Length: 445
Image (cartoon, rainbow, N blue to C red; front, side, top):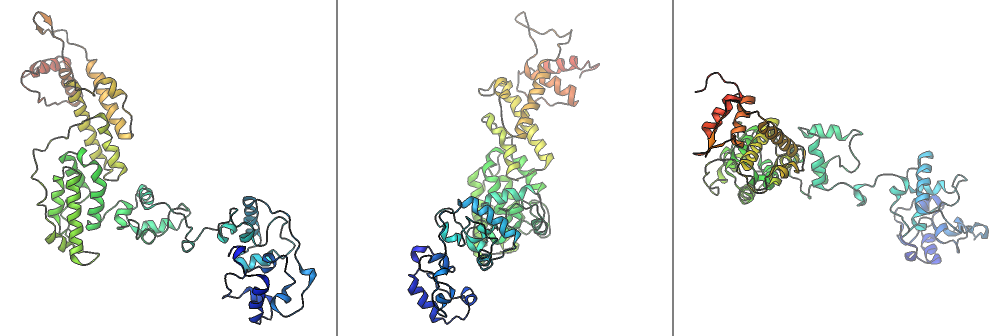
């Protein structure tokens, strides 16, 4: 609605209306080409000058009795809009024309303006759909939806495996109002690269899928060991021998990723390969011929990445949140690996890894599982009873079993096997004897 200050003066506006030669007022209401500076409700807009519909159209004399009574005060906008929502629902008002017809009836409550767009301009007015209690349309520019990243994070929690599953769900009452039904259209210029990326489920590793995976793994790559990355890639199908997969050389090379720079280099190669095809959808065969793994260094001795701080334990929660993987066997492998590193740190008395500091660890579900599992093992290991025939001495003093020896005994008791790779002189022999005593072994070799 054009603000009142921009409307033409009454007589000038009336002159234009009269030139249209309308025979009935409804013809004026249906005037599709009405200039924006001529109000749709002139009676409300020109309260002082108004002299009736016939005079406005130029088909009759002015009527003093038609001058509208000035209302001294309208309801506050929020309260008026709430009442309007109820009236629109009860009287099945579908559009502005029907609203203006309704306000001429005796059912129009006092305190509600006939033209709310004018009465509440600058006082809360948003739009007619808002006044009617309807959702803003995308065309209005007022539609509110979550950002692409927020919508994608939500979508991935649903664990759908195809766009058809999404679209079936999107038609239901379960879809939140701020999640668009057609995200591929809504977010086309806002980060959308495909359904696999949006849902977090890839049935085919195209360049979009690879780019999405690289983006999700980039923040945690420095925390993953080669064996963990290999497991993730194997389980999600990136290393599988799928007949559709023509760029296996690239995928196999992902197991050599060391840091974010490596990830960015591979992602850049994928993007360059796609750009060189001259098409938005590059073929897998083209990727095979144009993307190499020469930028990646030869792998060094594969070993478990070290924990620099206790905060590094949060990597498991991060890869679950980023939907890098939710495979329980991989997560269990990662938990066990980090429990082993915690033992190494505590046994070596590494600063920042004291038992009290481990007790104080906070974090997500998997961080807490890792912490609790280590502490449970620690408590049980240090509380193992010393066998009665255990009597090792040094310089005439009794030599109690150390933490490494207690851990070996506990692991042998609970897991029935243990590998002790401690260095020379660390006490492996005593560890074996202590474990044999704890387990009441009849024979020890």
